[in-house]
Structure formats: C-alpha cells, structure tokens
Length: 379
View (tube, rainbow, N blue to C red):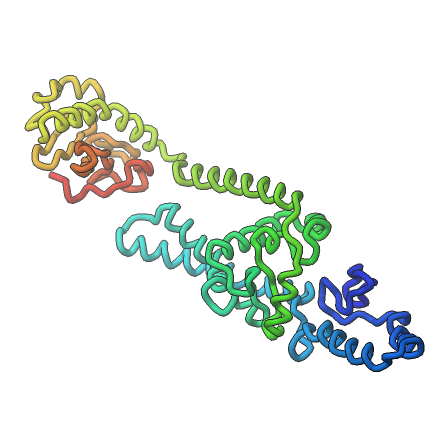
C-alpha cells in the first residue's frame, strides 16, 4: 500500500507507514471483514473484542501529540543549514583567537598546525554538542535530536564520524549523490546509516521511537563498500593536506631559505660527532678538538667559527662572509644555533634530536625546520 505522505510502498497488513510512521488508509475489504464474521460465526462478540485492542496497539506507536518519530527532509535541511552557519562562525573565531594568542605569547607567527587544530574544533562543534549536549544548535531550533539504535545520544567518536560523512560528501557531491544515496540508504541518508545513528523528533513518544529505530534496516553490502571507499579517500586527502602544509615552506620565494637548508646540511656531521661523543662519555666535548674538527675545515664549509658549550652541548655556527651594507638579504655574520634534546635514561639516553634556531636571523628568513628561538643561548 502506498503512503499518501511520502509515497513509500508498504505491505498491505501495515496500518502505518514504515518510513514516516503516518497512518495508512484502511482497505475496504479489511473494514468489511468484521461484519462478515458477525453474520457467519456463532460467537459474534469475540472477534470484535479481540480486533479492537489489536487495532489500538498498531496505531498507538504513532507518537505523542501527533509528533512523528522520523521527521521529513525539510526540518533536517533547516537544521543542517543552521549548523553550517555555526561551524563557519566557530571556525573563524577559533582560528583568529588561536593565532593572536600564539603570536602574543611567543612573538612569532602562528604555525599551520595551530590554525588546523582550531579549525577542526570549530568544524566539529555541532558533532560535539550532539554527543555531549542536548543537540546541535540547528537540531535544537527545529526540535530534533540524534540517537543510536538504543535511543540514546551517540558517543563522541560516532558523532564525529557521522558529522564528517554528512558535511564532506553532501557538500562535495550534491544533487546526483543525494539521489544515489536515497536509492541505497533511503530517507535515512548515508551518514546516519554508516554511523549507526537516527535523526528523530524530540517530542516523539519513547516507545514509538524505540520500535521505529528497531525496524530500521541495517547497512547493505553496497553501503559498506561505499563506506570503505570514502574512508580511504578521506584518509588519503587529509594526509596529503597535512603533509603539504606542515612540511611545505609558506615563504618559498625567500632566497635565504635555500641558504638555511644548505648550512643545515653542512652542520649535520658536526652534530653527529657530538652525539657519538656524548653516547660514549655521557658528556659533551670541551672543544671541537675532541671531535677531531678544526676551525679551518669548518671555514671551508661556509662557517667562519663554531662554538660549543660543554655544559649543555649547544652548538653555535657563525656563517662566513661580510654582512651586507646595501640592504640586500644576506646571512653573512649571522648565527645558527643547535640545542640538543636529550633522551630519557630509561630509553637509552643520548641525544634525541637537535632543535635548530637562531638568535639574530629573523623568523621570516628561517625555514620551518629551523624555527626555534635561541636568544637565551646567544653569547
């Protein structure tokens, strides 16, 4: 029997629509059946007494105050639009606040990962409120909520996954994808089916909600395949974006960046020798002579002087050349400072890595790998 509200094809025995829970018209043959039973049977009153409670039981889970369990598409679209505005405002405010805070505390320009974390928090604000609060602003405005198969609020991981599926796929592939997912997942939509969630009316009767959620179909084989493909693509794209922005040079047109990278490679053998000396003796060398390095050999590599602090192991390289007097960008006479970061004794000890920085080269002229401020180690 076709539902007059959503056109869902229901079995003839249903008294309410499987999709939207709307009451279905009673066929004429079913309405006439009790009268025939009265005419032919000897126990005329028993069928009437038994049929009334059954009919009432089938029509009872329609909801409280005529509120349907599963809302139509329009309230859900309205909630999504409101949540999209909340996400845009939240991302903008959090990114600006994080960048200004970082710059105020350190004096340096905020790195990419600061803006990335702040933007992700703003992006997931509706999902966090669906998981831990009374629902996102959009759903609260149109009196909807998100539940799992048990009728409870979804956990944080489930809510984040649902949110990612909803706003990435539906925004990147609108139109055709909407009809495609309707063919596979019905009115429930892909993000709810794959995340194991349901969008229901807030005022729906709890018993009707539990019955409707229990009858909802599970994810099909096509849905699981789409889930796998989409998840793989998301991981690949996110990895590429993070890798490019984290390791890429935001000021690649700066001619001094190539010089910084070259000097960093030239100084690497000295750092390796210092690491080996510390591993053997558990202390840093008193001078470069203990490492078998002369000042003349370092001058041939582009440094005019190399100093090493035997207490903390800090290496300070002075770049050879004459400082520029005409305003041309130059690293001559400037310094690269390497601060050793020691590994815990329970993990074997030794030097874990070297933090590259400078006490006189502006941060804008240094690469991301040499971003540390070494003013405290200047001499």
